[in-house]
Image (tube, rainbow, N blue to C red; front, side, top):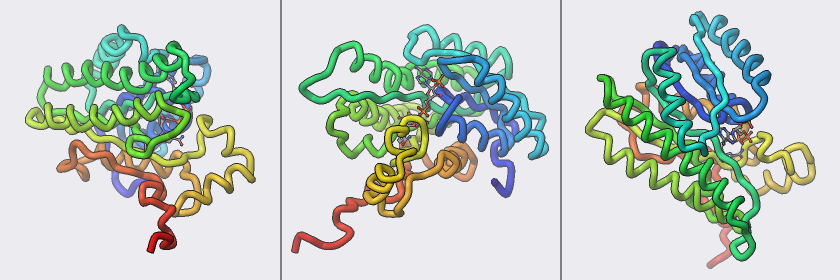
Length: 270
Ligand code: NAP
């Protein structure tokens, strides 16, 4: 838990936050004093329980806890503007946008269908671009700058064979981050990304709940284990806070060392 409430008085919007990393980020932001809006695409009853949990977290930390959840598909071109309008109508302003919604499915380079490929790009990359456009317009419409954090992946820089669309989407998020950071730095708007490695969430259900498969995955991670969503959430809180006031245009890899060329742990070349 944080030692000081770094996000008190801030309003944060987190896409795809009913589960996994987004959920942990929402909880961490509530604990640090933020008003949190989460979006998701399925089952509203999840979000009602979720919001009550966020309110409890805020109250335990001494904050009023004004939180909101609603369905919004980031791949819907109309959703970004409507979501921003709803946040501003409810809270008066938005300070921090977290583009977290993302999906993956196999798309081998020589065997993918257009609909699956387009959906992955639309949710994971275009959703972030559209939400950012709406947030940037809002940030510039009032004083105080703003903050955008994209949930990237180690696959922003490490290829993921068999998952072409996901690799392209995460690679694109890197350039979305850097381009917007440069374009809007003079307006006091910071844009960064967090790039997790392997995190225990539903997205990794195929190996996370199977001890043998999980051991195989974890053997590739220099720190030796897959992260909890909570370990990743702290990085978002840091980037959203004044502690990161001089950081923009960066992808911060929270990956247990996966981006350190683990195959070279012992020298095999010379
Ligand atoms: P997850 O547990 O599968 O949760 C995905 C979340 O995204 C859910 O809240 C889901 O909402 C929401 N979502 C899916 N499609 C959406 C859409 N079209 N519009 C709005 N929300 C949508 O995923 P996760 O593992 O936490 O991943 C979150 C982000 O981290 C993704 O961008 C992923 O690429 C990235 N990431 C994950 C890992 C990892 O190891 N887990 C590693 C690197 C990067 P519903 O509950 O309504 O379905």
